[in-house]
Image 1: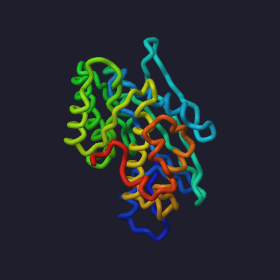
Image 2: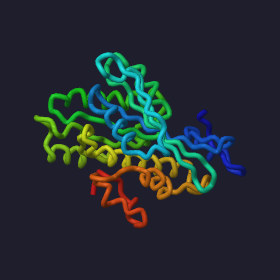
Image 3: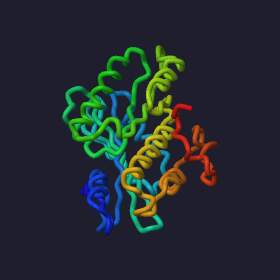
Image 4: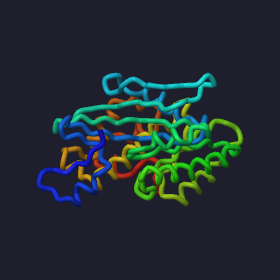
Length: 262
């Protein structure tokens, strides 16, 4: 159940600022919700499948997928990742995907409810530009319908399918990165390229937003380093950009999101 978190002795303004935080004091459990959003067949489900494959079994739940006969996700995929903090809180990171087909507009809006961060999965092919733009607009409209502020909810953009012909050039993707505030990551999700980098970036931004709003490090003794380390120390990073960067003992490893503008 989604509840506000107001520690003993805190004032009403603090409780109000944390109204969206999914924290159960009774169960000592924090849930972080990340939604993978984008056009149909852009690679949202493939991202979750690759993440599930790379995670060690002891920190992952089942990957639940509902598909139609044409192999498209009908409702949503859900992959829970979980760990316990030193302070005795159980942290669940739930990764959802929305259905991409136009006929499921209402379902996308429902799945987006309560999202703490969004990974927008775009198709790099030039022929998909119009669909990418349409779904980007829909994302912001769905956020507003759910009472989410598009200026506050962190978003990471992944340009997937970089291995296919007639895709946007690296210069064009760099221009997208330069124009916006969102980290932009190139990917070939079917080969696992860019998948974990996207996950790291979106979880890092989700933590920043939650901590700024709810002071997780103070109230439940969960700092950024612990949050990310507890997840990514249980992930097979071999062959990814994170493999060399993820020196968990380095004070600089968490300073910048992967794909963020320099």
